[in-house]
Amino acid sequence: MNTLFDKIWDAHAVAVVEDGPTQLYIDRLYCHEVTSPQAFAGLRERGLRPLRPERIFCMPDHNTPTHDQNKPIDDPVSKAQVDTLTKNAADFGLTCFGMMHPKNGIIHVVGPERALTLPGMTVVCGDSHTSTHGALGAVAFGIGTSEVEMALASQCILQQRPKTMRIRIEGVPGKGVTAKDMALYVTSGMTTGGATGYFVEYAGQAVRSLSMEGRLTLCNLSIEMGARGGMVAPDGTTFAYLKDREYAPRGDAWDKAVAYWKTLRSAGDAVFDREVVFRAEDIEPMITYGTNPGMGMGITQSVPLAETAPEAGRASYRKSLEYMGFSEGESLIGKPVDYVFLGSCTNGRIEDFRMFASIVRGRGKAPGVTAWLVPGSWLVDAQIRREGLDRIFEDAGFELRQPGCSACLAMNDDKIPAGKYAVSTSNRNFEGRQGPGSRTLLASPLVAAAAAITGKITDPRTMIND
Image (cartoon, rainbow, N blue to C red; front, side, top):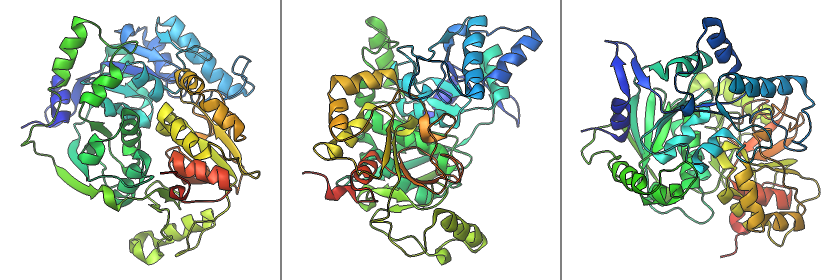
């Protein structure tokens, strides 16, 4: 019987080339400023226009500054990319949520929160973390610029059908364990290539118990273990999250949509190409110690010895630790921290700011720490202010910045200086990812908040009031 992935993929298959790719119909194409310019240039060269412009939404996010967005962008490259997206959207009649637009934000935050992404859809964007949208029960994945052009012109792409994998996280998570910790734990177990060639469905008691924000975080990080994408079957949590959001169906259309969405689940006897099971009770708050997201450990554990790594990879393992300034077998608890970043398409939603606030409420930011708190969208910013979280942050010595990708990949002014340590809620800790020479430790909003208050790596469970 079919898996959830099979059901959606097969419903969107226009044609299948024998021993080749599928021509896949795309319900939603998202375009940001970094990967789309050449695609639009290709349309112009061929004299083409988007086939279904109403299914395409554009917004800048990678290059947008997180302060003074009402002023011209200083960096000429960033300004050129943002301005080019605005012009391309206007020239081709596409909806664009530009800077300072109330619907602007990180594209993978705005899509779900506006219900532009819905269960059963196929969703693509020229960005690897498009996998985020799979949390709503969609087949969502990143594509290259040539495929962006293909989707613009035909509303279809040619795509090899991936294999299927189900990852079940069973049991009940412990104190201080978030969706980010689950994702980092799974990635450390699977390694960064363990899901290569697969589309992952997350299931199990711990996954079902997650909020929609948590599921979005979990699916966001699927790409970090090599997966083509990740997804969660839609259920009551999904429907409650989507109801009455701007682009969600309404009235009778809503009832019909929910009736269809309820069919979007893997059959009881569905066969996956691979199944993996993890126990939530084995997970504690996580932190990375190396230079890829698979190099993660429980915060009370010690950096693994090189001899535990495959022999062929031990030299690169030691090089990674050398870059980070860590030693085999040492604990990271108590290590000084220079920067803390809360935000990104991984942890830039309202629930993430609530978690951060739960730790910093009534406390003060460590004087040696620079903290960047960056909402994932203007809607998240409005929620933060409506709930009074901004006052909690201000009282604790934090400043709320304007929406954007920010320090996740340092394509704007938010760069971590060389040699400095950043506890970051983003998704990648590659060498120089957050700035040349920067050292990134990936963690949850709770771990980030604890570090911001103490000025060092701290187990957040010691700061959680039961």
